[in-house]
Image (cartoon, rainbow, N blue to C red; front, side, top):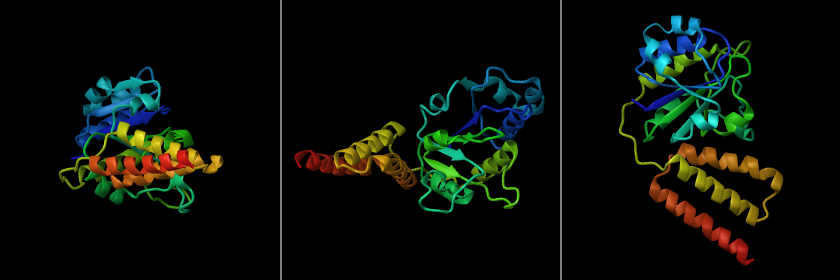
Length: 232
């Protein structure tokens, strides 16, 4: 099964975190990190049932950046999506598509669950390599966070147990994005479009789950265009 860390950002309603821990136990997950929560409410401990040990041992960090620092891929979740290819931030995978893609990933993946009221901010979604959306009725598409977790965990648990290919690390992925951004700047790409284009490049590269060989080729190719810009 995919190696997963569940990351819950600023849970607000007592009981939801406990329900998530219980679901993790149901589906064979154990790595839980909670962002910006100093203590676990007693109602969460009660609702976690046999997931109690997961809740007690969970990591507590102060930022999403800290929670994902040692992961290879990060998956954001949200009930708000976009069908437009121009809305890069909220272009999404459906769950089946994500599970199929994740079977190619070697290394730990973080799945980020947002706040009950506002979910993940745009800044937090921009830190994610993928974005997963669970379809629901248009008149009320926003799921309770623990309900969304149940669907996610079920799909992960039932996903194909194939051997992942060797992929680049998150550090290398970030380095490639940064090199791409530098190339845009050197080639006088419109400043107001650099952020969105770099995010689009991150999403494309992440979906491709590139190998170390592919990484070296891309770094070399971008480096060449970088040198040409300097010469000109």
